[in-house]
Length: 366
Picture (spheres, rainbow, N blue to C red):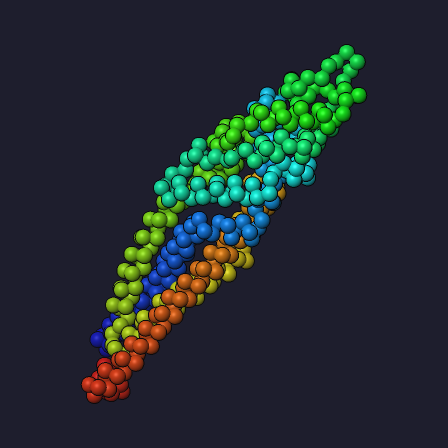
């Protein structure tokens, strides 16, 4: 082999290698950009309700919401919530008595909408995320409210012969229970006192400052703004970089008319294959790993809340993954149709101009 042929083969090999690298890089950047775009779309308000319906978020969070609101109410009344640590099944019983139907779901939906509105403006204002407590206060004032107080005072010690019962003293709802008094009557007085201590609404910031809401919730929200800003910039950058890589790949790969259809379809075929591999990895491994990390993070506060977040992430990731694959399949189908049309057009053009394909190839590789 003479030097001329060697250099020709070397250039051909380098072009093939560069084309392959560009193809892989384009597939990766394009698939990630499309994924970012889908995630950005899923921030729309219209999707939150479907997520709530999928996991029944409000009802599943009933014990946690009840605990937070009662903790805040007791703090407002001068009571130490640490005296009233109850298991989640007790808080669920209490919540069933005082949380009106749909209030939890409506409050959570409003919270997510407020967070989304702020995220669109690249900010996170915790003092603007308010919860309307009026439905809770009205339920607490009702007869059902008395039933919700009973689990909180059932372990209160009886009064000594020289001791009088006093409400909201020494950090307790009541210091002691007289032997001849009805617990329901005492619960009625306590529920009215707690209801009077609550404001009409409360912000997430106030709940965090008071300690009623676990700080881990704040830590979960803080990264949202930088993540959203990075996502916006990444989508724009990924879109531009994908186009640049695609044009560069086409410039190197297309050396004849016959190669145009194949060169157009290959990048999008590679993008689809890579996306399916990534989607499979996320479904089989990544979600479980993230779920384990969340459960470990919330283990000291509320394992059930960690489980719920894991389910929510699984639901959202499944929806995002399906939309991601759908978008890529649509793009691939469009490019496939375009490639077929170009193939037919090129064959027609070559035939019209009397350029047989074999003659064209012999001339090219002569």
